Image (cartoon, rainbow, N blue to C red; front, side, top):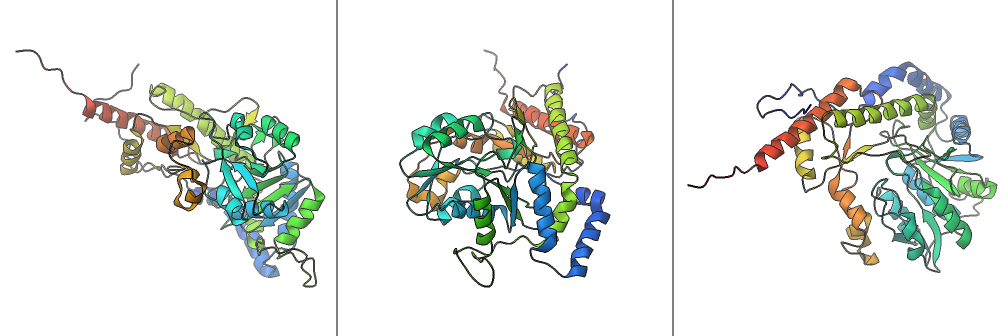
Length: 400
């Protein structure tokens, strides 16, 4: 049965639905967070220390990584990984043009050159068939991004990296808890990089980041690099940066880590409910929905739909008018950003990334969203398409 409603007979779908609600999450763990924060203030140990090392150990165990090193942000995690691998001027790193800016900017900040490869239109991750075509003798590493919470296709990346002696840096900023063929994000390459920005599945009370590795030498270097290359006693063996994870962030994150799998499961349930609702409202032909690829565990940092036919921006505008939270990740691919004009990419070089930038909308997916609000989201999308169809309908005039 069709759910198309005549204009003027819409159901009441005016309840606001936020894109994310951090307050709702906090209310469920308020006492534990307050206790952790109070402990830090009582100890007055705010930078590194036991809170950070304990949290690092917990994340290492969670990801099944030998080492975990906290830092100040996800952006710094990427930068530290590149520095630890001694990637710099004259080197090239292959990555995606469809990601948050930090992915490519970290490469550029080392003096190396980001080399872009188009994406797979279904997963939004690197199209691994194109990696070798983009390689040169200067290629030193591959930086796949596990975008929106689903791991990239790692088997081909491993084969290429092994064949050519390349490092793999995982940008897992959106994918803590995701897995590929039973292995967690963060242990799928040479170094894994995480972000604890507040809106992430594991988000802090501010900025924070972390790197993982099984290589003890890389781990030692990463620990030095985050404190200006200091090995103690003001003795510096590397030129590092100041990128330390605050003890307050570590304490809060340690509380949240205990709930991470439950929150990720709730996001997955929400994603499945969206699939059912879009089918119920007969929107599967109008809206492209994200799919979990076989042997991957998707944690849905974002739930990203596609609206083609040039209607994305109008749908986005009308959702916002109805107070339905939505956003675009990401409206301009990295190869078309002004600051990368020196790389001489032009529009049309990466058509799938450009098409994703033109067609995608992120919908609310946070764990506390609930079935009622999800139905409101989809009902509003259904009504918007009904309006657009009515507005574009041109009656056929009868002959005189």
